[in-house]
Image 1: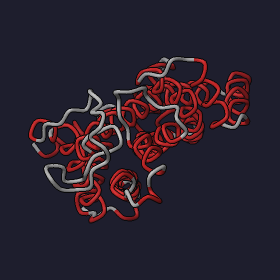
Image 2: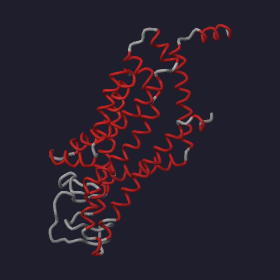
Image 3: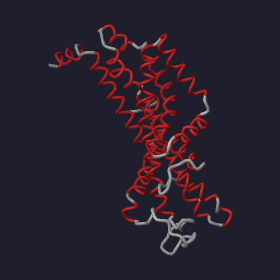
Image 4: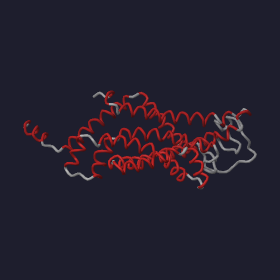
Length: 303
């Protein structure tokens, strides 16, 4: 029986062996990620911030739509744990509302960037030759344009809403992803299992989605994690410059921009809470990205 099993193993198709190897490597990477202290800290912080932003309004009810004229800027206390702003909005409730748009935009940009950049880079790397050269020159042309200047021009051309801003940030973010994926594909296309798939008559689409993309998933996931933090920071910078979502929408960048006007008057609660939660969120995503990168390093994996 053992001999039969051994013979069956020897006669198994190469794809089955590659799939088993990827599953084993994936289990080792998950185990390494679970052991990482910074991964646990980052994931816990992000889970806490997401619960604060999306579940908090169900328990802490505030009016974030109607401007309460005459109420003034109130310090923390008296039913407002973090005070109110110049429009009478509760700052704690405003943090929750602003976090919703910031997190939704960050994940939306990361998802769109990953899909577009992965497909573009994989096609360029797999095609090679003239097609690869032309596609990469297109990327280099867009990368040569200052991204912030281009983004400011585009934001002024369109009426800003969440989907428009996600689309605009995706236009600037997929370029780096495509270069990373293309580099991985160029390295993978010379491997034996890819050459074997070609010799067996595998279509290019099958090779790309069956072999190239799964084996480049490490680079893709790590880049996607960092893209979330970059998108949140870029969105906050746009909002700080007054190019964010129009009222009554809220975001942390707009809260910072409005609060700086009152900082020297002693209204610290208008600046420090959004600045602190923004920094914590970006650092947490970076911790998760670093942990994923370390867990995918075979030198740090152990059974």
